[in-house]
Image 1: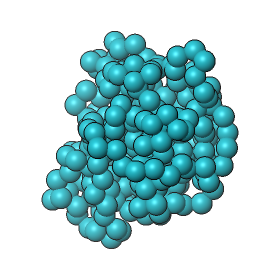
Image 2: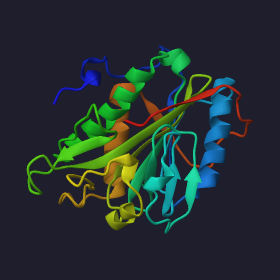
Image 3: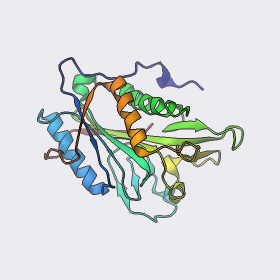
Image 4: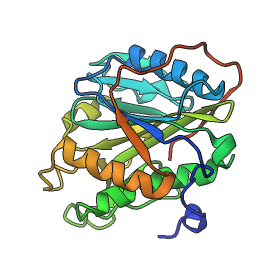
Length: 255
């Protein structure tokens, strides 16, 4: 299955001499509103040249988020809090066992090409999955990264990762969510990303029979990120720089 993004150049390295990307990992679930406030502040600081770029790996408590294209009719059972968010895409679920990566990069310096950026995020996920012998694939007509499930039937596929981004003054917000070992029944409260066909479901690494820990996934994510976007430094999650929301923003539908 060919995809229009397959032919794009992948990777968006920073110019020579740029500061390393600040790599943060939270060791306990982070409240969604708290994460949004910290991300907004950090992005404003990056845009002002007052802080380095950042990738923040975290988990959220169980919740649903509605992107800019969300159809609230897809909210089947609001068993968890629902948050409206400025990222692209539709309804999705976040919760423990899912690795969320908030990616805050300055595309003015790296290259103001949103299609290439989204394709590079997809490639980051695909390469990470490949390290665990899972073949992730792009789909032109469906958002996220998918795995084929011939064990379920002909043409069956499950989504294992979602992507939804926003940009403010060419600095990126939000990012991707990779299912490591979430409670998959929590996805039944929504029509995930508006995909309702029975042959398209949701899966995780553990659901696929890959007994992997979150630190193992994080290690591969760091390695594959460096190959596509450049080196990073490891720090704590307490270094989010304060700042104000910037006026110019846009959202890009999840892939």
